[in-house]
Length: 214
Length: 214
Image (cartoon, rainbow over all chains, first blue to last red; front, top):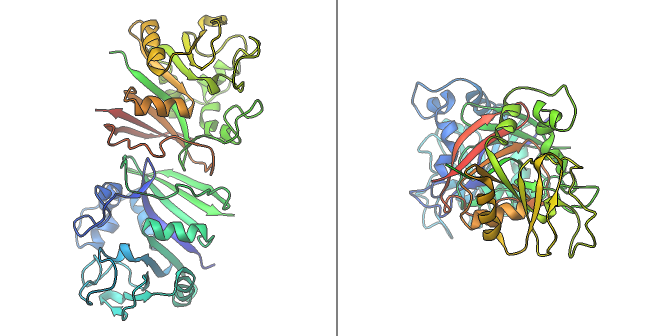
């Protein structure tokens, strides 16, 4: 059945999903890249970024599974880029170059309208200005029976969690302390929302935990 | 060198070190026992509680190490018991029966004076009413060059963390969601306080992470 999923989303031991003060130089906030060390070493990530020599093993398997059966993505505007407020022009096309790693329709939540943006490799960015529910509805239609993956960032995931819309989350708990940044779960009672841990597996460089809504 | 340590302290995936609403029936708060499932199965815990048939392996090794070289303990008053306010009498002697698992002097932080309490097996409870620093000073003296272990609960650990007094923490991250309770790190910037992860090892039923102050 089609699921709404968060997958391969990294958090620190102290619960942060991004560092503070995101900007052009710090796409996932200051020191946020430390969360993703486990991913950067994997074969699948290396291949996606035109490199070779990545690791195989549990981390790589979990990273690979995060892309399985994904028919559409939803991203928060800050995950799409560092631009704030109205789009000054159409020059910002995401962090990922000409060929983003999505290869599906991607729905970007924003308060500022913008024409859709077709990229190479099958990714089209659609800018959704009428809210979370609309984005999810459009993403489900676009996914044509496959899963909708909510890519992040933290604020977007939190909003969909609280709205009860996420079926499953695969978190990669990285053995680092960020100390500051965007906390994924602060003030959210996951248990009350119906979530429980269904799987926990130690990867080479992160602990992978899957939580599911019952 | 003598260290001030937290060891084998369990937290949930969502960061809680105890459940909510501690009372006589819920010594670690509602559902708090779920944090300790990994420990209850170990050989060392079974032996400590007069049982047999526990597991050996990484969880057991980490539990065993938590008791190595400990010369004194510090506990918060709520870890000692569910009694609040002035002691009505001396009948409450801890959760642990006649022979508590400490076997050293134990300094209990409280606002309410009480005579020291000698138990079987080498545990003596000392009730400290003049604050964190005094308790630590007394515990260091009593430890005679061995480590001081801060047993908890959450509020006590947080106070010593913020005071910069903890050298090392071994946390056992349990694959459970509590949703509510006492959060170990909320509002504390561990990185700014100088902590970093120095070890992460997957046990059979918890992920063991050691953080150290540089």
